[in-house]
Amino acid sequence: MAQPSPAAPDGANVKSAVRTVKLLEYFAGHAGLHSLADVQEALGYPKSSLYMLLRTLVDLGWVETDLTGTRYGIGVRALLVGTSYIDGDQVVAATRPALDRLADETSETIHLARLDGTDVVYLATRASQHYLRPFTRVGRRLPAHSTALGKALLATHTDEEVERLLPERLEPLTEHSHTSRAALLDDLRAIRERGYATDREENTAGLCCFAVPVPNRRPARDAVSCSVPVARLTPGREQMIRDALLTAQERLDLATRHL
Image (cartoon, rainbow, N blue to C red; front, side, top):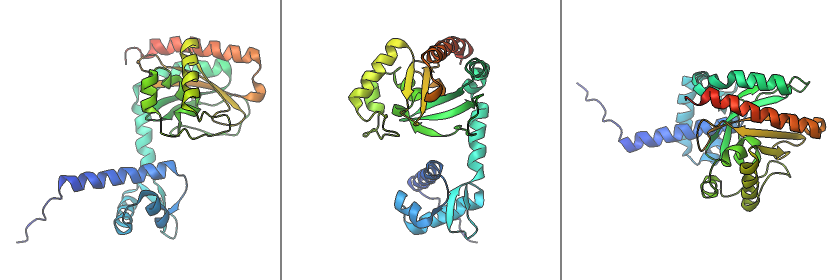
């Protein structure tokens, strides 16, 4: 009678799990389909073990391929897991009425996002009532230092904590993005004083955003923003949006303080 194969060492199991997660995160951060050579160059895994890992994930539905079977991208099961995270999140559920009301009051695009390392991840969106090309940011990651949402959250940390949170290099998304740590820290100090963050074309050219943290935690984990095209942003409208966000922050506090 054949003896069962010995179990793989714990270290090997952990290494395999880490490789799988990093592979899925690579696909999540790089849209489209990629060749085996491109993935291997990006991650540095041995090509033979990378191929076997990809084929396993394809069979399980976590990775998809093109008709030739030689190019790979994120699979539908990743969407199902991501959707279940949002559907089960207590903050997303508790803030829905406040987000809906804020969208009605401003008629602009509203976002709820969460700080994750050096990025913000978008959890919910309310589309603008004005005519814009359809888009959604749910599930998307952006650098915290170049978004009003991220800066609103970073500002709830001390300067020392922010220094530890920031990446080594602040990569710009537009010509207006922060690339200097000193300038970013000055911006965060001003945000703490006035109570809200701004992003004036630092994330997307032609778009201005305002954001406030959800105050149920300190430091804050989540924030809400309102995005407005610069062409539509008069001084009076800017003041109205800031006031609406600060009022919404009070409702968000009531809705989430028990979480």
